Amino acid sequence: ALLFVISMDVYAAEVIKILWPYSMELPWQNLKMTTENANAQQNKYQFQPEVKFGAGGSVAAHIALNNPSNTLVSNSTTHVIRPFSTKDGWYDVDQFRPILIQAMDVPVMLISKKHSTMKEFTDTRKLNVGISAIGGITEYAAKMMVTNQGTQYINFKGGFPEMMTAILGGHLDGGIATLDSAKRFLDSGSVVRLADSSLTFYWAIYAPVKMDEQKVKEIHTILTEASNQENVRKILEPASPKYFQWSLPKLQEWYVSEKVKWANIVGKYPTQ
Image 1 (cartoon, rainbow, N blue to C red):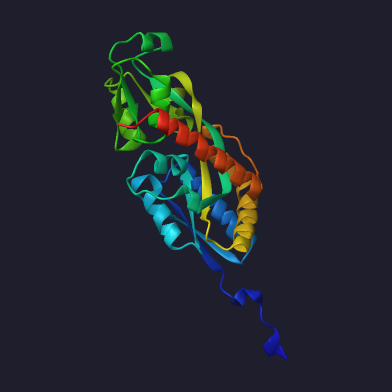
Image 2 (tube, rainbow, N blue to C red):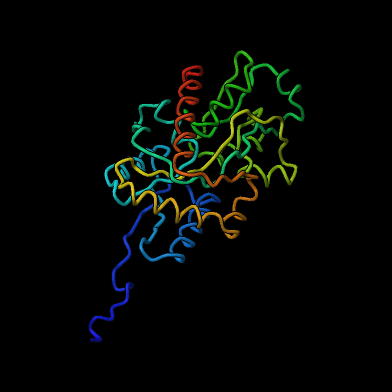
């Protein structure tokens, strides 16, 4: 009779990879802690965050689409923007669905060391403004906020750290940054926050639409609970985000409106 007393733990949990396309800064820590919470609270799935660099998330997106039963993607606003703004590593945004918003409404701003007010900045001829990705939110924020004729939008392939070096070295009139990136420089007084963009930043987790519906529902429930813990929330405090515990239909509604919004913005401000 003892032979029939088998613990459920004997069955190995199904591994679900969550791919992250950038460096290991605060959003990565947020994702990592979320997966640790998720793994501690259940044993059906084993969530594994993994860094997969390349083309602003396109490499990660293609891996997920090729492995739809067990791979998710975590990305910033860039996930929606890139397929509209570039052919490089193109993927179809309609082949994904959001299952969790990690954090939302993070301020995007124009910062400067050279200028102390927006008036002084806009009165300058031939402005040089730093952005951290062509076809990303920083480029569109720059073009919407800085409309002076002859403005040069300078892309830094090394991203924010490289752009910040140029700002601090006095080589740029200003640059576009998210609050989480710029906060320590603002707090130390090295740069000034000249103005905020109407655009805001977020991080979200997406599943390929080909993933089994029941599995998506289960993962959504697990990750929503895991991300709603204090040990996750405190990581992104410097970004001053908002949090939304949305249902799958509400997330889909939001995703549809994001796609429409960004198709319009990209159409209005062609990239370099």
